[in-house]
Image 1 (spheres, rainbow, N blue to C red):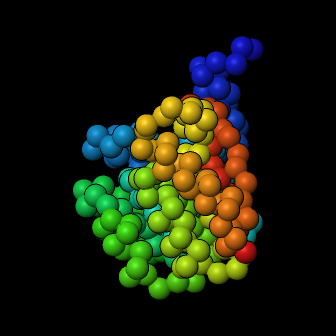
Image 2: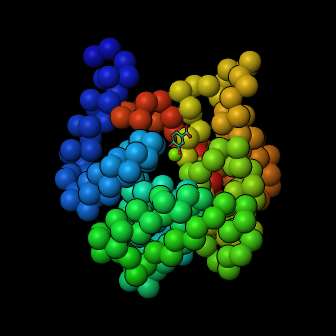
Image 3: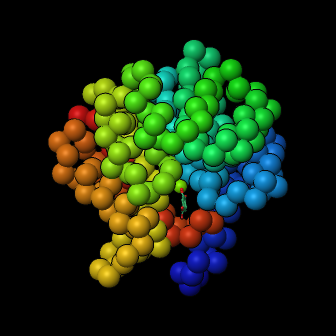
Length: 219
Ligand code: DHB
Ligand code: MG
């Protein structure tokens, strides 16, 4: 098979069919966000499942998400925290948050999810810490601000997942002026240099093109 974006997507769909399967609640959440005209930038099904597994593998009970969008990844996270767990998720757009609220409630995990509407930089200082896992998936220009808050609101052992570290390979384009790519690089540099973090990254190809996650632990 030739390595093309279409082939990556086909193989990704095969993996999702084989390992994730149909899911009525998640499919309705996606339908609601498409209907509302949100960009199709939620995580892929296999990546949503990865988030769910990381919560379970790490035993995280208090999860923070920065960037709710329509609640797709929030549902994956909330399903993993257990009945005593909690997901706090921050969304800048009130319209998105309202749609996410409905989808999360319809998925049966509404009692586990606290949606805070506002810019991350405004909401994060109001939160009480103690988060065991932080998923950062918002405006890339603020990645270093979000990583700093993730460390402050976490503890030794907190897992941090940062989305979109590959950006179709643009992270190594020398002459880029794309603020999202520059923000992504700043976040990666911080993960590499700041002694509060120990990190690596995984590139992904699939239905969302060529991208990836950084995964870190708070030291
Ligand atoms: C963008 C943001 C995302 O979180 C994502 O997963 C893909 C793209 C973007 O803003 O371009
Ligand atoms: Mg993303």
